[in-house]
Length: 285
Image (cartoon, rainbow, N blue to C red; front, side):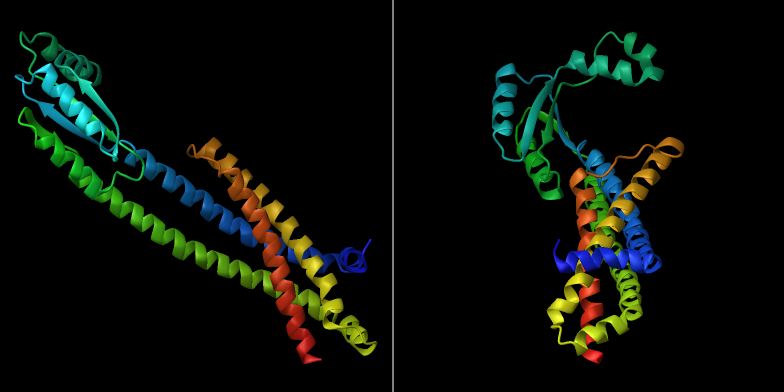
């Protein structure tokens, strides 16, 4: 076993309380970041769920011929923003209305003439549901003379875009703040551990050990502490996710790559914090 790794593992046995302090600092700090990531991810999922329902609906005049409808369908389907164009007949529109508006079921069933128009429902690709792509598709549909009206919920589209921007900005600012606080806490805990072993570092200096030789055990120790803290933080975040899902509201767990990234970040934080703490101490002796 290399000397640096052997010394790093021995440090856990010599100063278990300080090692535990570093691990707890990493795990609690990343746990806060993990909770925020879980919240931000579910907010993003909710926004994307609402956004996926954005579609353009063109209501057709009764005199629209099948050939005209087919030509418009092919034309709109060819647009790069469009995922699918679906024709809804008058009868299908009435059936849907009866099913979804149960309070008006008697009114609809007593009608002698179907008052609902046929329509073209246009769904868009992900990333093409902003104001400009939606308006472009709506304008192309409205250009056809047999189209009576085009709707796409312009107010809702604007609100969704604003909400998405607010969520992205909040995620960047608050997430960055949590990460910075986590880094400070971790660095402080590691600095305490390094200070507690200052005599050992001075002795190694006196016998001619290089800075790199002195730093390596501390760096490995910080990396191990960070990785363990990252794993504990992921476990705590998952426990919080299970608790919220079981008692409050159903939420979605983070992607596996996010959880792995959190563990990796813990290791990197521990490594960098150790490097900074040891380097500063070496400069002072």
